[in-house]
Length: 278
Image (cartoon, rainbow, N blue to C red; front, side, top):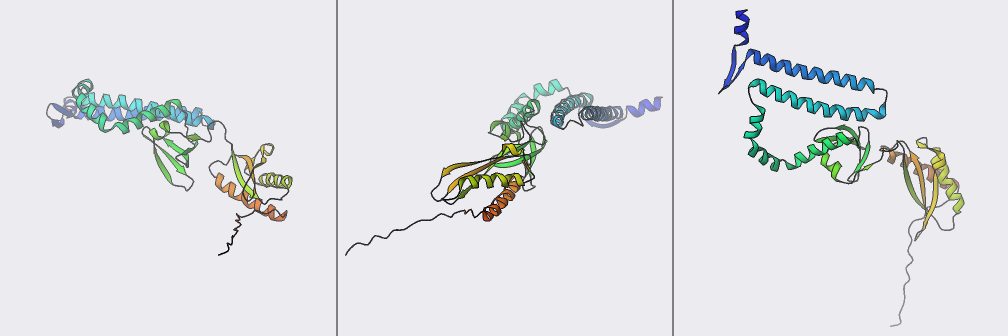
């Protein structure tokens, strides 16, 4: 028994008045392992409950991240207390340092606060498709300081959370998993307007990724300088790859225009030369 006590009290490291003994190291490892175990149990319980509910996965992930950060803050405080560092004294003694860090890391703190807001409000979820600064991004991960997304070129983009909370962001999948899109096309003056409208709507109906045929609509929107301007509106669930869908619909439109002798004009300009007698 004395041997065990001597082993536990054996001093491994000494820095001033702070001494790390064997039992201190054991307690540190115990707190670390216990923290990991608690997080694993929480994660397993939360995601098992909602694994069949895809719409709630984002909410569950956000709540888990908040709990994870809180538990790690508590565990870090316990680790410091175990070593002998008083957290309250540390905060009081480093107030000036914290002020300096706050000024120097203002943007970082802004991103962290924005991350907490995103996780708490859950207005942005994993899998949402956002339009940020003109770029379309599919959110893959929401972190405390940054979020990670994938753009249409399969390139991972790291987004500071403050960019999402302070700028105008369009969430294409926030209220519905399908979104309305449009394709503009011009035809030559003299074309049969009713036929053009019919061909445009039939072109959209041919594509398998365009949903709800009753909501497909073609419109004559303007009289252009060189063409009658039409607009095709349709809904699609393939939000992230919508440019590919649009390209395929344009090919169908071009084919059907050729079949029905509908011409897409090109801009023309008439030049009149005025001669003057010299």
